[in-house]
Image 1: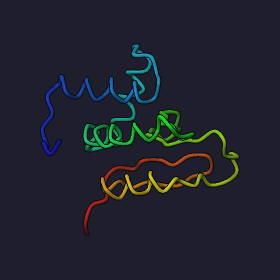
Image 2 (image 1 turned 180 degrees about the vertical axis):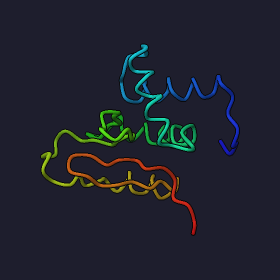
Image 3 (image 1 turned 120 degrees about the vertical axis):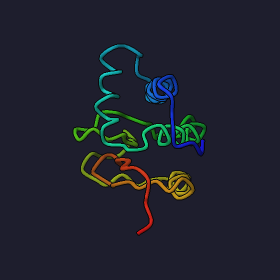
Image 4 (image 1 turned 180 degrees about the horizontal axis):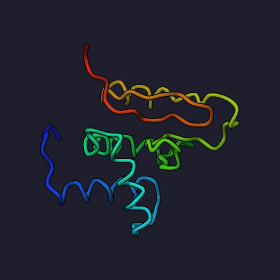
Length: 120
């Protein structure tokens, strides 16, 4: 979507899509978690649209989307990695991030999605 304006319905749909991508139940607790996370993303809905493009790859890999981050960011995780080592992203995820201009931060055991890269 190349639209900068999203209706209330589209915002709620993006929240529900994110929960579905993460495999979370759509209940008041998980929707509240999404509300906390949204505060860190000026373009939350566009991030969710970008994540939907990654979904086919995630279905056939050990990587998954998570909302467990202590700093309220969307994460990419892979439980087969030791939590003391930096998570090495697959080339497909790096290509996806570059195609969508996604900025991320590599941490021990996860990669936090920070948002979109902006030209200086």
